Length: 415
Image (cartoon, rainbow, N blue to C red):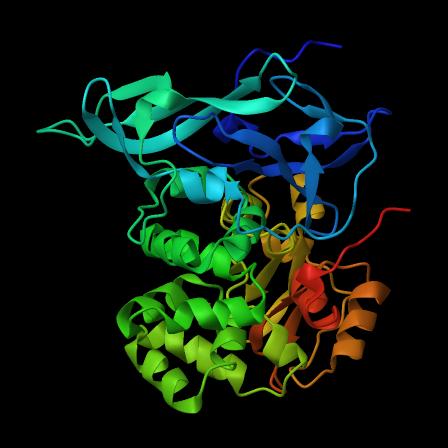
């Protein structure tokens, strides 16, 4: 086993897998917990915040950490699965210390913290030893000069700032998957969460909102001005936006719908018109739709879109004009696996699955689940009484509605 390096930077720890002695992954690093007494004394590292399976966050004491290397963290395997709750005497390095305004006392240079290093002292305790500080950009330089200095040479790390920025924390969040970023935002103190939300761009905030519990979604949206809230809703998938708007007061919902682009608002209004937990309410109105003259090459080019979920990329829907939902008559669907086996010049209309039945928008959640299970599908078309394609229900849409309320906060134990 490799030895622990003499100095470990906290921002580089985030996302690293945590293993038990048998080599099984038990979670991922999400933050570092320290206790800050004075600026003259190096803070003691108490442990790590780890995300375990089921998206629960627990505390891993440093006494349980046996080794840290470039790609993973090893523990004794004896972990308390109780949810982590931060104490008033504790500070989260990633969540609260990054972006603090500080001053390097020997030189008088001011800047913001973008990383903090920790290392083991002679008594084997882990302490914060160095601070990475970035000066503000000057002139045409967008990024200022950086400095890595001893902890004792930095002033301002022991005080809480009501106007603390979020540039470096947002950078760390942007490196995570949306679900992981959502978990970190969920656990931030209120003032830090507000700063992060303000600093995230609309598209990234929309991705994160889709992964947060409903109460967090409503709280975050309620603190945005109406114009930005509408912009963020436009960036969300229409079904997620419809679910979120349905949780708002009728007056607020109507205000935001009026501010959204008409086409985006129309999709959301249409989804909201269906009874909850039906295929119409769950469906995504923008699957991959092509006309009958499209080729296999055209279809493959469309499903390569990185913004598509795997479930949406699994089927191509061939329809008569118009090709926006509600479309002309649905001719049929083509599976991605079949498309990969056909010559690129082949017409998609010639490789359709003619055995699959369609869902009606009023189909209940149990009927949708049985349909996907019967045909071994991850997505299925939803059509009206005239055969026009209204949208597609995907297995992730179904799971979001089938799982119990608050499932994101529950622990799923491995067998």
